[in-house]
Length: 529
Image 1 (tube, helix red, strand yellow):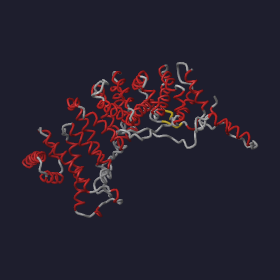
Image 2 (cartoon, rainbow, N blue to C red):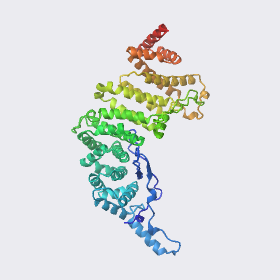
Image 3 (cartoon, rainbow, N blue to C red):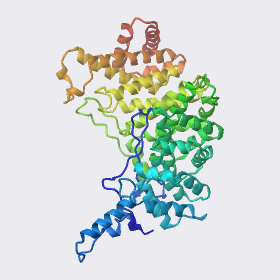
Image 4 (cartoon, rainbow, N blue to C red):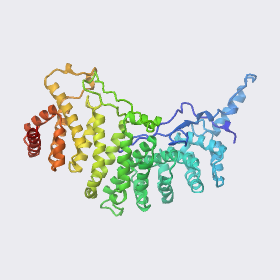
């Protein structure tokens, strides 16, 4: 079939990768992704669009010498409508011929002609009508058969990317997850260390789980059973997080893991008293490789601009460090953090979601001493991010969610004390407390922010400040050994005074114990001076 039989529908622009940081709402529309050819050099994260390879139909183009012929035009339009997929301008004949070529492909490398045609079908699969046509013609079975009979990573990437777009439709996921062998094939593909293919595979994992929140619980059950039966599934995901240096892959993997854990944990909870016997969630997912991979990959994604620059230009061998910018931010009034941490805020929430699921498992408490230091490092990095200009104040829903999750995770870790985390938390609390005092002084005009409509009510600052004060007090009570006590001597004097005043004002045994600990430290410090 010649390439000119294909035409992209008008307005079919580049699609977006899917996002599911939390449980998706029932009316959420799953995004689809246009085909991108992967460049496997280096980390394999670079890609270029294949859109320019798709010309308009030859029979729809006239030369300058052609005479107008209304009858021929009408006949042409009728033929095009007859070949079109639904209301689109995609060629049904082209799609079916491409599927036929795929079914007849011999083992070996992917030919250029078939690769180009499959890429065009991948592009077309953003249309629900095209997905319906593909499903009616056993496209999933053809794709899985082609994958099982080949070791061509480019073919894997194209077919898995096509499945990712198709999984936006619940009907596709129903067919896919209803076949245990197909799920096992998708799980086994996680052992392939090809960045471009793995990014598409993570989209498939994520999109399947998004449907669970809209009432398709059976999808998660089918997935859960296969995940538990296929030994090493969770470890394989952990290896991806530990070994990859591609930010795109790490981001896609974290989102997929978040979706899988959230859906499977929900299924286990709802089926606890049913006849469905599922392997315990902790046995399947609470494995060292996955837990360490989640923490390590998050810290990599949260590295500062200087570290990212070093990665890009290979500064590691030069031995030349970029001088940090420590100029004061005029709009905020405090020294700006530098080097700057630039991170997609969705990644922070995704990490907090994963961490919340894992630390609340009863079985996790026995191993918290192993994982707690790494988790606290990640929480401390989030606090550093919030301490940058305009990230904490004005306080919004995003910041409150961060602080709620951080406080909850600390409580599940039995308020594990770490000096840096305590110092960053104290700084966040002091800024919120200072903002409350500015409100108390009664002049909203003292705000440094131009848009006062974005400013949260004073009550929100008071509530979050109180929440962090209790967290600090609990952490301080946990700082029992000599080394921890010694570290507390580094607290800034002005913040110490503000902190002591706040502890004394609260009538609670936790605050009293915290004040006692802090007073002992300050007395020893004064005695040594």
